[in-house]
Length: 308
Image 1: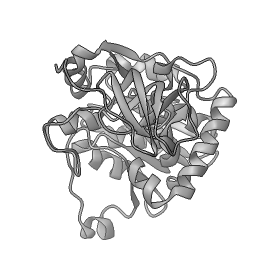
Image 2: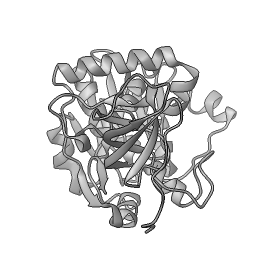
Image 3: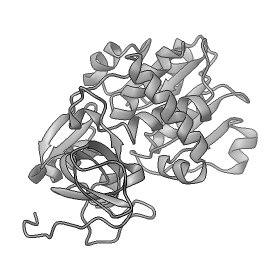
């Protein structure tokens, strides 16, 4: 652990925050293994999601001002101080602790974008949420139920009660070899309308087999279990489905209007109490490697945070 690094200085359109909580995400695991496409090259300060207090601002910044509690996404979150673009520093909702705001810029918008503008979920439809015990899965279950969907969720057996308490209608063992057949069983053979797929690996094949032919949508936003292959022949002769890729950073850059609509709806869901502040599982900053190892081993539930 580095203890003598200099405090960074904000650029003209940036703010400097004193980090009080940093979010731990699977992308951090991938970057640690150097398998994250387009990720930083070593050596680098890890982490990209943080919440804290603004302590300095660039000369062109009018908002937020020093003293404001914000959450945002940038580079180098696993540290005591972090620079953020001022436009990406979102105020922490009133009454929330900083660590409770982790996920506002990553997990929750990912879940909402996957379900609504990309997945097109509507009341009465059925959604399969893979890895439902994770931070994005938690948000997805709550949002899908609010939309009036039937939720089929997957998680390891030890996490079933947690996922069921979120409101999932069916909770299946994510490690089953016949997962697709089990999804078809609980849906009366119909399959699901939308799949939120972040597990990757062999589970990806189950997602393709469990979704309805022709009209079904599979939104892929992660690959925790490794990469999976699909060919154009598969899409024509085996899996006639809508396959949609989602990276929240790419969505922000390529479709800012859609992202703005997602964030606006997210604010509405927070105000309505659909998405409420949740206390993450916290680790000391020095225990960052332990947090990454446990996340990779799928031994965690919900949001994880490092506390400097």
